[in-house]
Length: 122
Image (cartoon, rainbow, N blue to C red):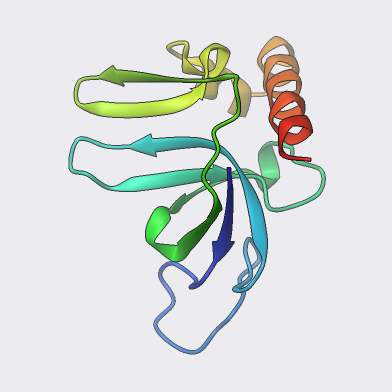
């Protein structure tokens, strides 16, 4: 799934970029999260390294969908009204906490699944 940034979330002026994303640029969506209040977010790695420092959850209304095809590795799960659409391995309880804490196994799982998504998108 690919999206194009059309606005910078949280910026009220004519700014077209942030340290994370730039209006007009296209990004590969790594996962989708929608909370029980209906707020939808795209998980994007806007920087080339794709590591934890460059991952971000961005409100979907800041983007327009360029290609809505889901990677074959994505599955949808609903827990307590929250919806997660991502590789199954990323949906394990505690996965993202371990990843951001620098757990090597979680980082390896992230990279493996991210590479599958990027391969599908290319």
